[in-house]
View 1: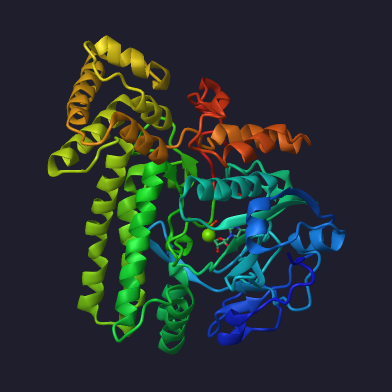
View 2: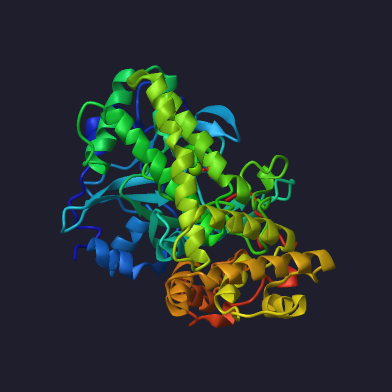
Length: 518
Ligand code: AMP
Ligand code: MG
């Protein structure tokens, strides 16, 4: 175990690519460089609120014992070998080219090499302005930091590829935010998350170099990404093979989000990880009631571009932007062909995942019709997604009446069913039971498969909201409980949370809808 303070940090990204070493934090365009040096701006007092023991152990990082180590987590102390920088990237936001964006409030401190030779980047989110902060302050509020800290770890335990969070600290400084963009700005406590990933590179890093027509650096960034993160890719068609793998990883990630009911909320290309990780936790949410049109992001409301059911096609659209950025490096037709593998990969993995959710031994063509019937019926009946799939696991193998079926799923329903909905549900369940009858695996094996695929505990927005309200008052009981529960999402150990979203949370800000203001 090494302490954060005494570690010798690597800075290979900084050593490889051109950067602006001036340390100037004035917001500006930075042509010609891939990063700008950004020393964190010290805060009033750094207080450790949470520490991810498992992650720290995995990386060989000692829990801070002295204030100077805690200070690293809040940007108040920068170790000698660190080179803090903000990365420069661009991106498409809500379907439009947005030009240069960059890390406006994220600062990479350095690369940490574990005892086994694995390298990860350590990054502070909310540690003050950078060259890319544009009109904003480079800070993060406790509310959004708690959300990123808990949810990125929760996704890890759900088995969904994600960046991780090592620590959460309070800054002791208030941060002004207009939470609803309605002119009612208020001070909120500030906080900083230290997040960890093999790389925080996004589609937008590549898009920016192409927009600049900087083919030399584009080529070098692609090579760097392949060498470090896709080392198994060799040979002549390296760029295409790599892009095909990014397509596959992105498709897999979309399937994973649909599996657990996660809605990212801001799938702009600057928020798409080149490693296929869930990255940049903002106004995300799990779906409570199964609604493909649900978007948690108030900014996304007019078009619902990033709604639950649209995520897979947006993943494809975003990959199209990445493909366009790679045009100087590969033949157009071949890039398009690689991009078009998305649909096959997505549907194959999606049906496999749904087959697991339904406890099927295999997925035949006929089964895809059953899966479609599930989607349509759930979208009509709108039960709580998480509870529905748990209740499906315990379904009796013979049902006789619509009432019996409705009663079985009663606790997962947000509304009384109309006669038509009830009939729809009954028809689905009888078809499903008929299919289960043909399973070549035991009922027990089928149920185990279902339990492994559908989480029983999810970090619902209203729970996060309650935990944050408590933390703002200086209490951390619910926070600690959620931190434990999220580590066992497939068990029934935390069944006190096994309930639908309460009525009071349906319309309450922060419990169903959120803004990007964080
Ligand atoms: P997001 O949609 O949260 O991924 O952010 C989009 C862009 O806005 C990124 O370039 C962020 O770094 C930047 N940004 C978001 N919030 C802030 C903030 N409080 N201060 C500076 N930049 C920010
Ligand atoms: Mg972002």
